[in-house]
Length: 59
Image 1 (spheres, one colour):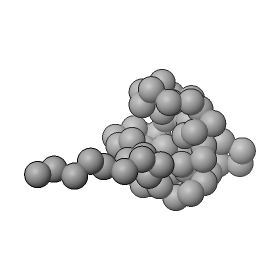
Image 2: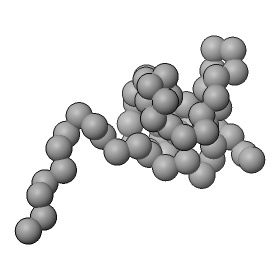
Image 3: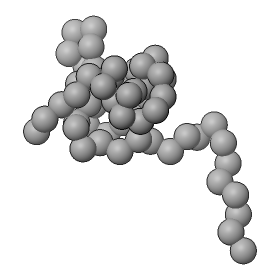
Image 4: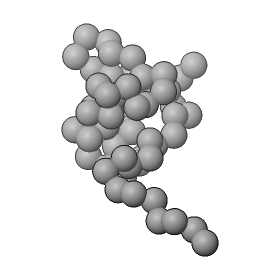
């Protein structure tokens, strides 16, 4: 399995590096592991859905 850094994930997902770190700390990035002070994120991991907003109801 290939891994990327939080910085690379931030660029890929269009969010800040700190936000990626927070998502990893919360366990919302599947397969992410902490290696010392850095996060290793699976290359094929999807960006977690933003839980800070509600999805609009579809009729």
